[in-house]
Image (cartoon, rainbow, N blue to C red; front, top):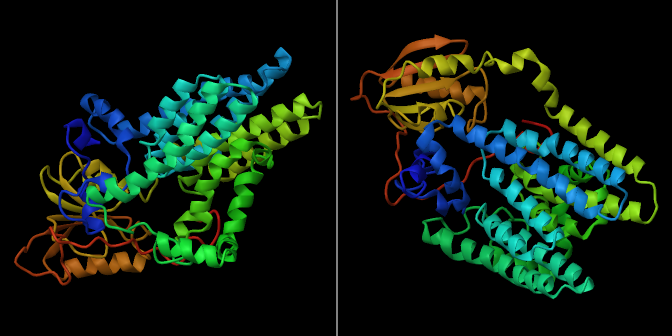
Length: 467
């Protein structure tokens, strides 16, 4: 974001060094997220990562009135009292949504834009403002490279609905979006990301289907049952789907809008990356606008057919609220949650001791605080030879697989030119006092560096709620 604010391509030494990308690598070669540039002016006012946390909160909150409008559209034929209650219920369930809670807990992510853009696309389509719907669909494609698949699915739904209603403009808009959305994703993934230096197949996580998209397609065409096999193995994938749909009482399944969620769910249940299976990351926030809109449409249809919707509405509110409480909503009313935790407070204290302009290897949790005034990368399994080294040893931190690895990392540096200058509650700050001493395994990626994939700890993906 800081690079965008200086009218440069988005770059991050933290990302580049850890994953062995060449120096100067643009993050547009990692994920296609040009929508993030919209927040660059905020860094002109306050050059601080907390700007992004506040911006994400505002973007999520902006969805509340949009959800209320969606409820009013789908309940348009009902009596005013029902419309008002549907808007209230929709806004409440959205605002207390466990996917938004999880995404906020995990920090800033490009889903901050995907959520309001998806809602606005859906709302404008329901209002028959097809030009505006296409505009928000186009912006959604800039939030992440796979959002074109969502736009394509939306185009199909919009075209069919407009055709049945005799709206020629809507039908034409839907057909264009159905064709253009997947095409945009294909061009971005196949051309733009590689043009920005992204390695081919870097995020391919579907080894059970094939070694690449072409191989996977051939495999599926000759043995289609492998899709089902991949989707239910391991069983935690089934539990994930049950949680996602069950938290809205299965209501999304009653609306064609659910089709928009299929590409995003398929990406996860067919994946062999365990990070995609739990329900504690940001991935579910991409689904939340779709699922909630579909649930409201199902309730509206049930009401129009004079079928009691109160039990379904109460069930959706109760289940989604229970899921939110289980995933951390209760923390907001605990006073200790509003104070730095004992394992994080020493990191902030130690970071203040590092001088401006220094090179630093820092715990992933604290590294963002140092980006404005130091040359910082995250501490990982490879020594980088930085002037300062800051890490916890009592609590596992990304990307280490265990605290034993973290302690061994500290011991290695202490034996090869580093001196401990500060320690508290398992957090240590080291300073390189003997630069002449070589460090075993020290490496910094160069122009010909080959990017590496993240090694996922074995316990990740073991259950739905493991952080």
